[in-house]
Image (cartoon, rainbow, N blue to C red):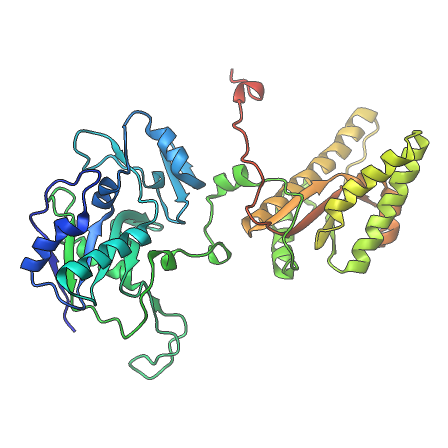
Length: 430
């Protein structure tokens, strides 16, 4: 197989409202476009034609508006996931190659844009088997430089799944899925230089192996398979307290991984003074909740709290802990603390162990978040130590540090975005 990549020359400057297919028809006819060819066009001219051009007045605000999820930040650079699922610099907001200034935003529906161009070209050129790829220039994790990738696809497969097919030695391929549309996009970049004013190319000779036509959206990796969803720093900002959970169990390996992370927290005197009771079975969870409710009810009655208020508060607690598929009770032991003759240092020694327990809980919550799980910490067991020790079979040397409820992330994730933090309220620099 041989492949040709041919620049499409002669296209005028594109303006909002222009019909790209009509502008491409003449140059493609001159190149003898035929069935099996793939027309590649840049995102920039698609965005211009669709009116996705905005004033270059507050780029940061446009980046924020186009961002669905922040993956990482460094200085003025934001690596963001867009509403399409693309992960790119500054959410695809770009000032290059825009006559008269301004910024271009990504097309609202790149696959829809590609299909409209494909259908119009098929009619005007009388070529049914023509494909269209819309490209943008992305950086890549772990690699320097940028490359053209496909964000919109029509008329060709976006990917070709070779799993199960034999390699040249006859061994079955196990994990090979070729991102065909990205390979076409990357090849087109060889003739569509950034300063060459060539925003389109014709790629000829691509073998699709009879695979069905796909979409650019097929190339977006789902969150369940995304091992690099956030930078470590962004994960600290993105973790939220989430009190509702989607149906389904929490994988044991995810909880084990979170507890391993918890055990890396700073600890006093080279100890690891923590334990974690993990309750995933319904009887175990109900037993703990019953013990908590009984102790809490007794305390509230001792405070002369009305019975209807008691019932409401316990019901509110059960609404969170009762529906969580997994409950984790963290414990701390003071057995490794150093003895002191004076009360002040003895108290500080105990506080040091409590602080290490808090650090372990934070690591636990962050590790659950990093694996795409929802969680929240609730103080519950702090107020019923004897009852919790009894139901979870812990001796008197262990002190319960609340309860972590965790489960699968609900649809939509956190209900509200975290408000910005005014550092003047929390930090003083001298």
